[in-house]
Amino acid sequence: MRKNKLKELFKAGKPIINSWLAVPSSFSAEVMANQGWDSLTIDMQHGLIDYPNAVSMLQAISTTSCTPMARVNWNEPGQIMKILDAGCYGIICPMVSNRKEAENFVQACQYPPKGYRSFGPIRASIYGGDDYSKHADNEILKLAMIETKEALEKLNEILDTPNLDGIYIGPADLSLAVGENPGFDKAENTKAYKEILKILEAAKKRNLLAGLHNGTPEYAQKMIEKGFNLVTVGSDSRYITAGAKFDLEKLKGIKGSKSKGY
Image (tube, rainbow, N blue to C red):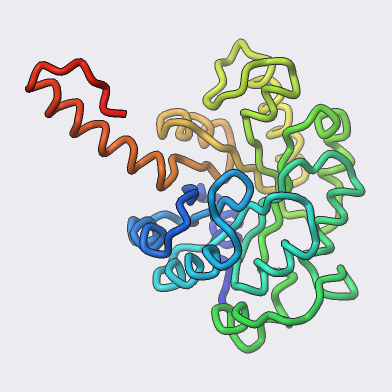
């Protein structure tokens, strides 16, 4: 089976640089995959992407060495199994709030006897190899999102879930959970920042992979230095917006326009 490069990077102590896909396009996914990211995450929760879109995007990503992941829209076994069968090599599961939900998530990613994933890797065996089903349990990366008030209260029991590979922090929902405004790149004097470091410390004690969503590369670098193993920077839609805005501000500035180019 094709090795999961992200797990190998984690074992080697090297940071994983991830980006986000929200545009339902195989071409934009292909463009992003050719830029040198370690991984790309197809966002099926807040993006505009449905299952047929995701399959074509996975096919585009697989023309490169970039590792394909997906954030599913809920902890729903059918959706998790189906995107794994399509060849996704990592699952980020949102709103995991307790041990039972963590167990349900992990077991949906694993074949019996470890889990209850149904057999049918229709595209996964093409991408991963003929022996996919024999090794998939060990190669698929399983990351639970810690972002609710209950998850913060039950953090230790979630992290002690057997076969969970790690956690992923969404600062926006985490901020809401602690009574702060949603956003990324939280300042050090915020409750959310303090909780982020607590989660990181708890994950490190168990040798679990710790991932974080970031708003800027500078903040992502800071979080790598703090000990995060995976950092997400930007997205296809944000890069399109930023590039267009940059040029329009220059051109409209030359013409004397005050437009910001939105």
